[in-house]
Amino acid sequence: MPRNGSQTRVRLLETAERLVERNGFAGTSVDQILEESGSSKGAFFHHFESKRALAHALVTRYVDADLEMLRLGLDAAEKETEPVARVLAFLRFFEDWSSDLADETSCLYIAVLAERDLLEDETAGEVHRSIATWRSSFADLLRAAYQAAGVTNGPEPDELADHLFVTFEGSFLMCRALGTADPMRAQLRVFRQLVESLLVC
Figure 1 (cartoon, rainbow, N blue to C red):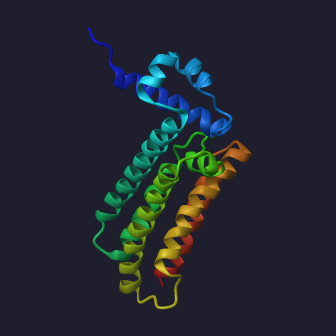
Figure 2 (cartoon, one colour):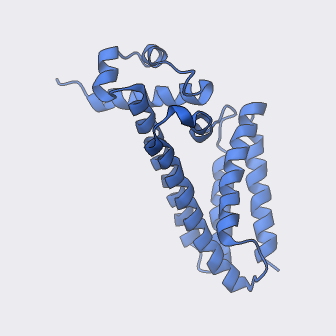
Figure 3 (tube, one colour):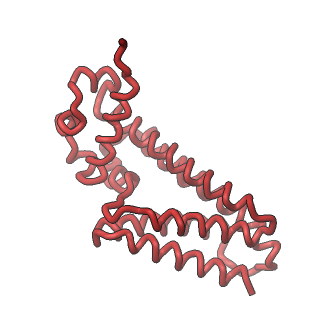
């Protein structure tokens, strides 16, 4: 029976993600990835021509998963008929998501961008793809809600959308520092409450 190379690739990526989130990109060696994943050097270089190629594949995979989470949040929003309700449903989706986070939660973006000089521009560009997609998607929800609620002096929708991304990333940093997922749960709740106070009179 032929060996399933795709399973080996996924195992290498999953192992690399855990190690990079814990130790950083520079602090994670190929040998560490091989040891923890139970893979051979030949298998590694069959799938990735270099450690930088691994980084690009790792970040692309992470961004794709991140944007899938965004899509699920947008799907939750679309269940509502009113623009304000859509924004709040979107934010509550992520509040609910945060209740299932493990205490050792972390984010690959922080680990990667802290060592951007070690990465190819196209790899850092994948993170930009995530930021830009989150911004445009949430800002569109906010613009419709602003119009429906008659908000004329609120924060710019693009800037408020970026603030949500910053809330996620800052909360991941706090979670890592404190060893608990509580900051993520708390900050997403605070963000939702602030947006609700802006949209609901």
